Length: 153
Image 1 (cartoon, one colour):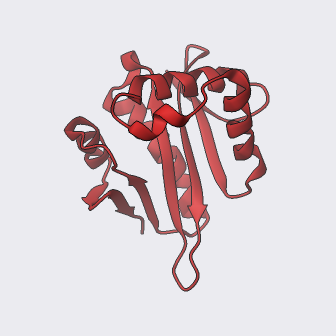
Image 2 (cartoon, rainbow, N blue to C red):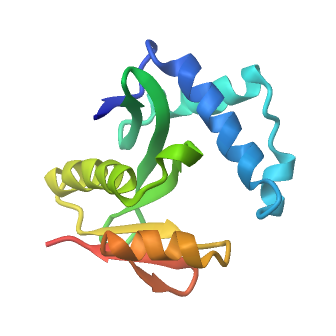
């Protein structure tokens, strides 16, 4: 059973470990990750930013009370344009990467975004990964250039 909780001081240290795992797993595919300091202090400082932003949604997924992943997202505002919602990252431990867990995390954010009256969600597609693109497509996102986009109505 999957339980989804907001990022809090109670689960902060668990998220530091998950975030480190995500970076270590993807460092070979994304050159930008090589420049990120994955020490505890640096990751804590980076994640602390999520506490300080009003329009940030960060949820942690648990299975049998053990942290297995997270989703990190935020509002993007541009002058003269309708606000959009950016899903910065989704991470699940390897053994939990089935469609169902991913879908539950994404749907949690989509539900919150609908309540904020934002209609466009997107995620970057900087890595040419057919498997990742397929998972995003399975929950309704369409690849447009370097972005995966979903319109909510």
